[in-house]
Length: 336
Image 1 (cartoon, rainbow, N blue to C red):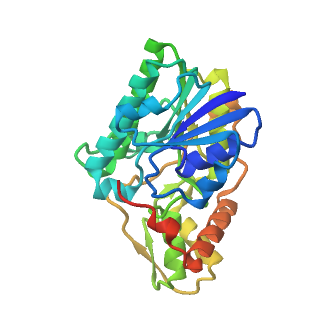
Image 2: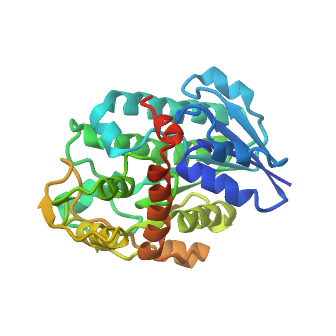
């Protein structure tokens, strides 16, 4: 039986990762989380009913909290961080503080353990400035230089911490004898992803009958990756020895405009009103789409779910949630 630790396992990707890993009887999964989203929601409650899963609750920005963990995990997935464009603009100081402490405390704890392999989750935001400032190729491979467009802009605080994490985990692994790999996620979405993201916003706005419907950043492009494909790519990266010391882009190469996304969502809600172009968040990159050739060749990674199919699943979940009148889950998404 493999012993697996997921720090940040109650979050969107972490929860789905834990759920997938627990489908195999030979895995024992420990979820470590501060339950930033508030009290244990029904999804986590259902998950920890599995005999092969346990939950450790604590604030891991405090190094002493790591004493609650064991020392001999086979696989350690490091997902814990504060994310979200709104958060970077509203609480940039907390993004820096929380994410940096989580990284440093984890690295120092790893020096004292026998953990065999670590996977650190990073972001496409780390190289967004390179695309905008220097016109690098799209789809974009992993060997692209990482760039911050404006170091003083709060929008980049999240990317700065992820750069710290990439460098920290890769270099600590060399010095302290554990294997490590990095995955950079690209616009992962799906049910239960939270409420400060574009797709939940779209669902809420269409349900409120907004008209004219404002298309923020209508001409920007992204490649959206459904959660099931992101989880599969994450597991493949962890379990393949070829990934040791490597960085992988996890996403899809199906680049679409925000206008495409918004109008597809409008079709789902049978919207017959007027669309109107609108500006987007300051500091948001114009185009982004990953080259996943390396993940495909090394790991056998191959996304299966189209953005249209994934969007339908996600909008169905949020429609049911918003129309249920149950705000328990939504209200648990608090500022740190």
